[in-house]
Amino acid sequence: MTFDEYVQNIDEKWKDSFLKTWKAISENIPEGFEVDVQHGMPGFVVPKEKYPEGYHVDNKPLPFIGVAAQKRHLAVYHMGIYQDQALYDWFVDEYSKYMSTKLNMGKSCIRFTNPKKVPYELLGELAEKMTVDEWTRLYESRK
Image 1: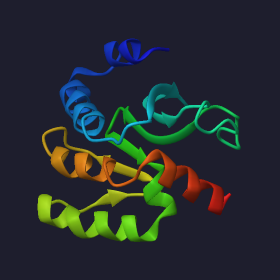
Image 2: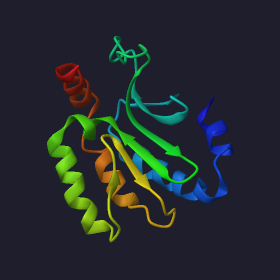
Image 3: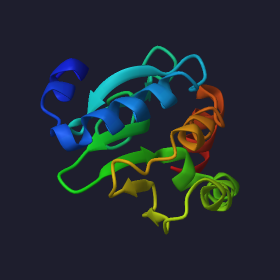
């Protein structure tokens, strides 16, 4: 599946918020990450040229951020936030400055259940917080 095919299949309820989220992330993510579709969703990965080992689970390019329009929510999967406690704490603290709603978050998954309430600027800031080299070093230190 390609990025365009994924977008074509998004429910209209989520399409605009998905595209705005994608734009916020893609305009702010540091150089070196590439777009790829993995695990049924588009995202940003560390290319194999930069990190030949790839992801230990499937040897595909190392995932970093994925964005998925689900049936009941928009999800942003940020692998760095799962591995870096300081980044996690920063995001949790900043979230309340942008949103009046309760943060709905798992280990790496940030969920938004209202397509009209997505903190695009905050997601852009989150995307720029970790470079390819920082992410691969962190990944190596935790696997």
